[in-house]
Image 1 (spheres, rainbow over the protein chains, first blue to last red):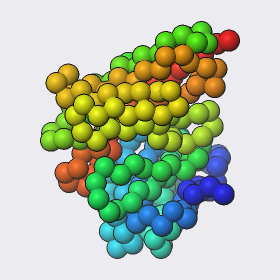
Image 2: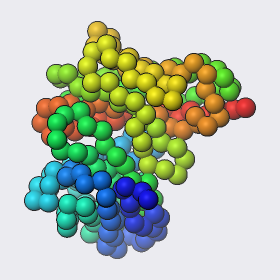
Image 3: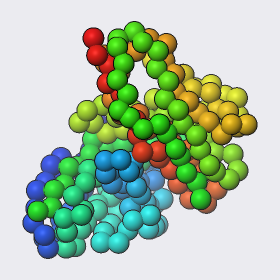
Image 4: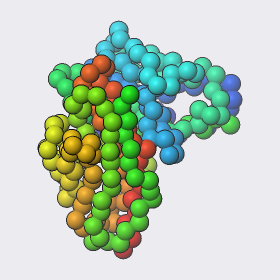
Length: 114
Length: 113
């Protein structure tokens, strides 16, 4: 079974709709992240959370919000989707103890906003 | 701020050819360096890492050496296989602040039989 799961895997929606992307992990990690991937731009950090009560904006948080419902769950919402939010979205987790810890990624959600 | 620059792709090689993907970085302090690989339709997964200068990370025949004097972390493999076709991301993690990971833009590798 996958350690980091994302739902849905694919989503097509229309401009102005509210969308929620969900991420769950069974790794027991306290840190969770949301990234978006665009061709030629690598990964850009949207939001990150170091524990349930700690939420922080990343590089490109405008137009997005998040909710950390539990240690294992971290949701990303687009309140009013727009076409330039069409991208591949990844959730990631990492262990909070010590430094230099790798991040573990989910399989991604491909979002298309028409 | 921190940044990672890696060679643009796509890179097309014949099976058993030598692979080199350049990666250079700019960072304050002493970051850890990573190579992640993304196979088609999947998320990123860690390929190898190095946490201090002169460390060599290695995995599945891939190697990269942390060169502080040239701020580089080039990825190499002596003989690539078709199954190595993927997108490769160089990344750094700075221990300061909130431990943000900075990714390069990725290099697509295609290995042909």
